[in-house]
Length: 80
Image (cartoon, rainbow, N blue to C red; front, side, top):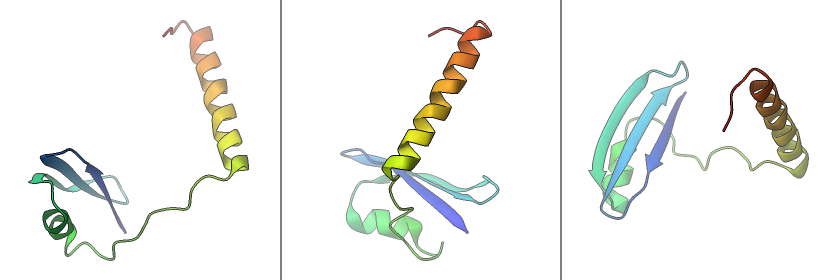
């Protein structure tokens, strides 16, 4: 399985496609436009909408974990 990300901007966008191990398969700057963006992902499998959004329970669990890590880091001397 491969994963794609688009850093979308008005004129140029950055495309990055990585495999499940995190190795970069493609890192390319392209003109922003539907055809160019679709073409950049051709040959890398089916384009899906991505994972389902967090449920309220998922969001709460994530925020609690994030808060725990921030408190832990601050106790170790890291500050914002």
